Image (cartoon, rainbow, N blue to C red):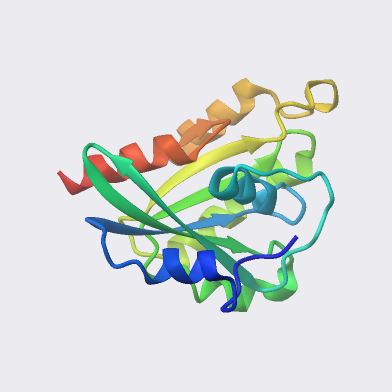
Length: 179
């Protein structure tokens, strides 16, 4: 599984396309193995693999969507969740209009780390950045250890939204901020 590279002609076309009304920089953050890369591939390429490949540093994909009769170019950045990459990835927080803060509903440790990730956002991002809390791997219901109720309560306490599929809601929220 690889991200877009400079030699990938589809990436070059989409990334170089200057015909858009808005451009949003979004970051997907969370602990390692919560499914950030799989989430991004599912959204950007409509593809999925259960094979685990750890992101090293940071990668991104570009996707153009249409919302409210506007052409919106999304730069969606996939960050490494490991602590050793934290100084690299937090450098990308500035300029991000939105964050998808992801935890794995089958991994309580990833859920417990959400508060630390929020602190990172408050420290390194713009104060008006939107944050959407996403509980991932909801299809693994038999392995679930974090309830939907717990996710909703945490999101409410943090002043965020908890959802199990995030990008469409995050885009809608960003559009509301533009009006």
